[in-house]
Image (cartoon, rainbow over all chains, first blue to last red; front, side):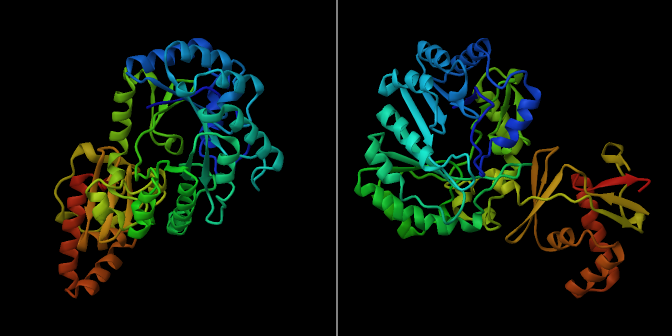
Length: 345
Length: 88
């Protein structure tokens, strides 16, 4: 798996956006906010040699790329399954290019709480999104980023049923961005949100709609009874966090947007996505000893690998560094210092 | 006088049962528990105060507390969690 950034531009302003900080940095470095077609061909080559048959297009808002239909055409020509992460308010030409793809060759994840206003989507935005979901049918399904404990999921089920889109809802927990200031769901709020998700999954199952989890969930946000309910509801649950590999237009591969400041490599560093992912994972590995809660490192579920301990970006917020100095008056108790570990003040 | 400092590539977090210290430069994680966790937690204090607190916490004479403290500081220096600062 690797996500290709094709547009550094987005026309919405979601308060929880975890890409915004990285994209602002990226726009300062890049000549153009959009991927050039020859670079896109290089990315397709990269996927081919990495043995990846799925192309996952991200932004910003990927459908705002002026040559989006051509990008889709070239990806389809290479036989890729096309996945688009969109806010759903896409230009006509983009919707038409996706609609033209066979249902089995295309997946569009529509973020339903993306909006221009921090208060959430306007009725007009909601109506436009509904129209796109209806038009794309089984190619598309809605996603929702939970960034506040009082968020309402109620609108999602009628939305799926009314539009005839794929009967799936993907839920994500808004993650903090290293170095950024986005709004995110604090891990202390996870159990409260967990109870809400269980109620939602139960309702969804009654309508034949499946709930699936994005990365960053933790097992302990659900009780054992809740987990039974989720299983009965057929929910696709997981407690995972690993390098997604987001690749921007300048050829920088990052662990994921929330950790872009901490773990990045140039695309030519290694030949394949697997090698890049391994290196990024190795860099962050020491931090994986901890989790989002201070109980994670001694938790049985983390120790046996069942749960990763939540989003690494959320875990990283717990770590601190202070330039502490201590002056030891009795130097004779120590062994002579090695020259290699002496720094100059 | 010996000045020891926590280098910039060292990050830590308080966990249940101790402190987890990550050394980014060596890509290692160290779990500190018991006496080590206490000392790390109090490391920002001036040395004499740290000795006094350890003596009080462990109910041992200050001279013994200082020996234990220096042993721990030396082990951290060897492990790279602390570095000697010249002219500090």
